Length: 126
Image (tube, rainbow, N blue to C red):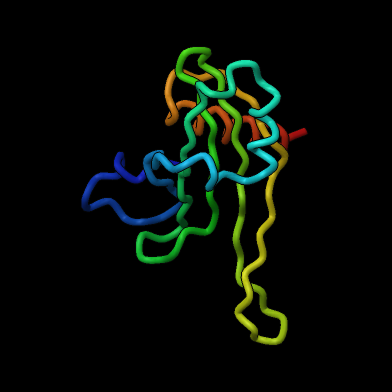
């Protein structure tokens, strides 16, 4: 994957890419992710972000990374939520599948997403 702002203006839109980290309120994070950081002594230091994952520049996001990042401790917890349209009955309902929380060490929200994505890739190769 490559981030959206690193793609040259005239480059073809092939492959998946993601948005820059977008700050959000903590309450917008998944309850699973919030439970993870609530067990941390430094839970008040975590900031919430989302990163949208796209397969097409013109299409809607196909997945979202949710991220809780602590700049002081350089720790982050992330989950990936994949969203797909169902083909059953033509209802157009959306189905969400989420990964287990992934803890990583990182210097920034962007590097935390990169590390979380790499951890997912490493899990798939096992």
